Length: 137
Length: 117
Image 1: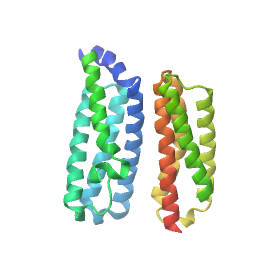
Image 2: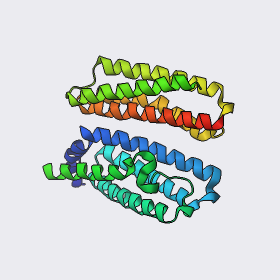
Image 3: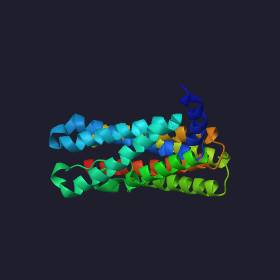
Image 4: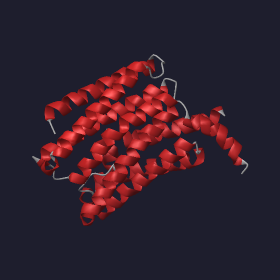
């Protein structure tokens, strides 16, 4: 594809330097969110199906972001960051508005308050990093 | 699992995180100190996992507990590999994240352990 050479140069800019730290943080969140959701769905899905499905969805978004950032796929990463930001905001608001549907915390409950609000800051930092790279190249 | 031991482990991981922040701020790549620190952290974490697994019947939330144990064991080698690959200040940046994560995960392990008591 013609996008390939562009992706290689841009990809290196996405991957290296601070990008490595982002990949590391996203990798940890991918692991944490996915395994948490797996445990929740496997052991007590009936308690709060909505919260646990969202939890699993968050895990998938983090996995996509980790891979996209590690491989330097900027477009996918930007899209996933936007989904992630929307997810944190929507789930954060829902969890505060309708706490009955979210008896057990997920990564995105309370805007990620259970994880030091890192889930809220992460997509913003990610987008800043990805879009700064665009301007430079 | 031993509360005092894990407490010291959290402290040591935080010290390692601090040293790697300082290294990153001074704009240095990973040096022998950070490498040795990660090696020691890995040994400490392996010992903790051994203690915890030896007395696993104590824990009610087994799946989560083992998940966190695996996380703490896998993270330091990953950070080592990353520190070698990225020979800029961002190598120590990754190590900071890794050491901090090990501290947080050990804290969670303690919580789960104490809840089962």
